[in-house]
Image 1 (cartoon, helix red, strand yellow):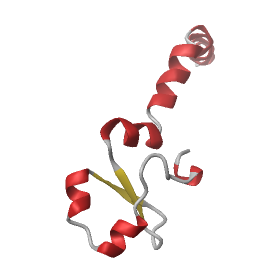
Image 2 (tube, rainbow, N blue to C red; image 1 turned 90 degrees about the vertical axis):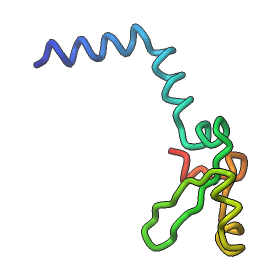
Image 3 (tube, rainbow, N blue to C red; image 1 turned 45 degrees about the vertical axis):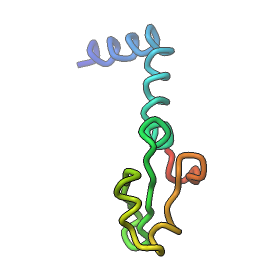
Image 4 (spheres, rainbow, N blue to C red; image 1 turned 90 degrees about the horizontal axis):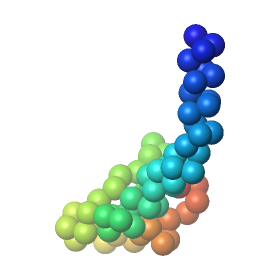
Length: 79
């Protein structure tokens, strides 16, 4: 078990730049930017939903006003 942990840590430090880049590329903000998505927060659950442009067009005006694009997304959602 200890050997596996050592190997995992060693692998991370040997490939840190690649791994950190992949982590950054897969944040909510970067995925929203890449695929032109919008995020609609849900106050009740504290969770939101992601919609495409096509889905966005079918939303109510109230939901559209709450939606964030990648460049307006608050940091609290981009962890």
